[in-house]
Length: 223
Length: 223
DNA sequence: CGAGGCATCCTCCGCAGGGAGGAGGGACGG
DNA sequence: CCGTCCCTCCTCCCTGCGGAGGATGCCTCG
Image (cartoon, rainbow over all chains, first blue to last red):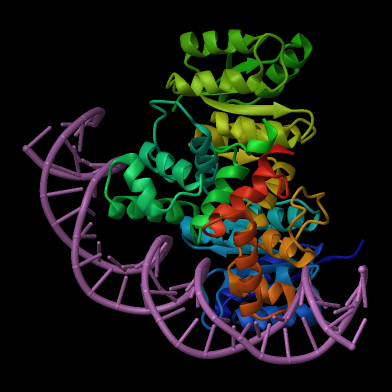
């Protein structure tokens, strides 16, 4: 069994060196290359075919999310581990949707990084506990239909937002939703904007898809 | 700082004893009670107010998911860690939607259980790597490659139109669909216009809803 | 052969929808 | 009482989408 081949991607050379030292201390991990930005990451991922791409999320030229998207889209065998300083919600969701296999917060212990790399190389996925938490919140609250007082935490949809998402998922336009809910169209747009923001979605179509996939809405054909 | 108070819930006494031994070996963890089923779990969660409810998912009378739902709905301070033998998708999502804070596969090392309990008690959440993997798949699908043939009941549509509708139902924009299918954006718009016309739909959102309702696309949450 | 269906592509145009940013009021809990 | 969350609504702005109305080439089938 060969060593796990890792590509380091970060715009700060010192950070790269730091990670290199941490990783090279492990006998079963080998750093095969470095890149300073997203573009370089995609290029080297192509030529080096590393097992793991360890990628910072914030970088010049092309950020980690876009680079991840391309690496995954090209069908490269590398699996991407995203590193971030902050656990910003939008970035998490973007990165996961881009196809990242792991999402780690930098302030964790060095062990957790090494463990994560081994886990991902073995075909599984890893999220920092804090990141996992915000993800679970989303799942937890999307499905709560008539649950009155579930303590609403970060990222959860409010009651009104669920109303709007339901109407949205029936194919109604903003004006129609406004009419049905008895509010202004601007209000509907605000609610939708919040839904999109909370889940890192781009438009109402993706919101409808999420509603179906998470069971908020059940397809007519199958119940 | 007091010890982490744990309630054990499993229908098999031997399993409970096993977990008790594992947990009691940790100085900062205290097993304060046991329950053989979901009903007992809710009742003891109410009276004991444990920090953690360690719950098997498959049990007689009331299963772990329903018990989790009630504990969360009642606003009890306990956080629920779900244990399962298999990493069945449906159960994962159900449990997460019910409000579980962690989801572990039983075949993991004892360490991971103890770690998970500490992490959850600290306010974060944990998922088994394999479970995380299937979760990420769900998030990633919005940008993922298309699934192979699904028998469609949308006979009126041409082959290309079905391709487009499928891409549409993954939340892609016209430009992205064009890129993926290797055609111009105008062509995509033409196909979409035909789809809308054939079914008397107003916009792409309604087309996506139709795709789900007719079974062209199967929700990630329920297959 | 000609007619039709399909797939590809084009322009011009209007508007719904989404981003950014703000603002006010009501409810609830520390 | 103040902070926080929710709901409500506003303006300005810009882009993506869909409508209308074409054109071209390639099939197949009568």
